[in-house]
Image (cartoon, rainbow, N blue to C red; front, side, top):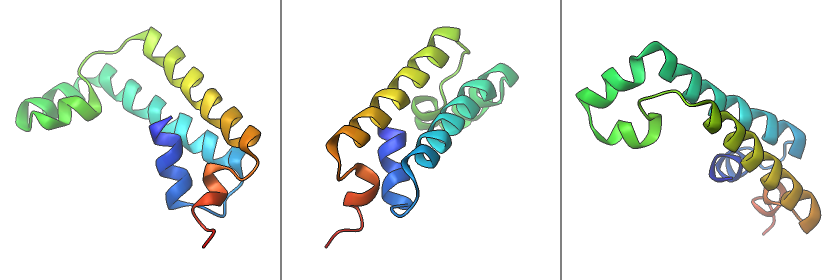
Length: 90
C-alpha cells in the first residue's frame, strides 16, 4: 500500500489502474532482484538497504504485494476522491 500511495503522490494525474500497475511492477522487481543475490550484496555494503530491498526471495511476498496493491486500489476507488486525485487538489 505504501508503494501505491507514493506513486499516486508522485503521479497525481494518472489513472488509478496505472498507479496500481506501477506499484505492483515495482514491488515485483524488488522481490525478483532478490533471486540474483544483488540485493543481499548491496545490503552488505550499506545495511539500511536491507530494509528496502530485502535479502531472500519468498513466493509468499509476491502474494502479499499483489494483495496490498489490490487493497490500495480498491480503497482508492471506494473513497471516490482517491489517493491519486487527492494529491492534486488544493
